[in-house]
Length: 264
Image 1 (cartoon, rainbow, N blue to C red):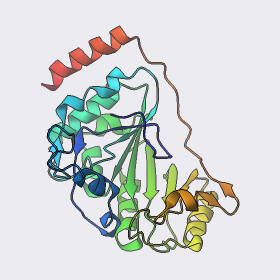
Image 2 (image 1 turned 90 degrees about the vertical axis):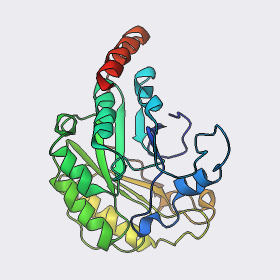
Image 3 (image 1 turned 180 degrees about the vertical axis):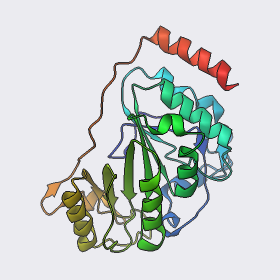
């Protein structure tokens, strides 16, 4: 878990799973893979095994150790709903999020079908909790819009879209029951350019549907130079969230000890 993330729309990251595999065009220049593979073979490094998918159970209790309420991006270096992550392990992650409910969790996946299925079944007990936000990646029409439909039909209290990297004009979208939209261009070597008209189309639809709009970045090879201003202003909108005070360190420790026994 890290409280020093540079991701503009969150405060911290939590990675009880590391590594992933490519599934669609949005994965082509995956920042997580590029970062992880730099450390393949480095003994003792968290990414000693590069971007190979691995469960990291010793990270499960991290949110219960953090006393200050924050937004947490879950699995910034993986996908919780990857087919190699067992259902029972996903359930453990969910139970930790339910127990450490003073944080807000942002879960983002490209495996929207599996997430939706689990929200109708084993994860139903957390789907309705307002402090857990469920999101899907939308990079183009062919792959992204079906994920949007799956998310809309899933039983969740808070749903969001990460439209990054935005690779083409998305045309009309049905944003009913969507609570938040993030838009960003691709960054780093080989970044595919994003056109302003594509972003304006998403912004206009968010305005019409009264959905909070967060413009993350233009992207490019040097993203710090292109910035995140759109038509002369920045957009950093979020859904409303209820802030809960964290229990004392002793209570948090006891809660984790009890939960750890239950998780096995």
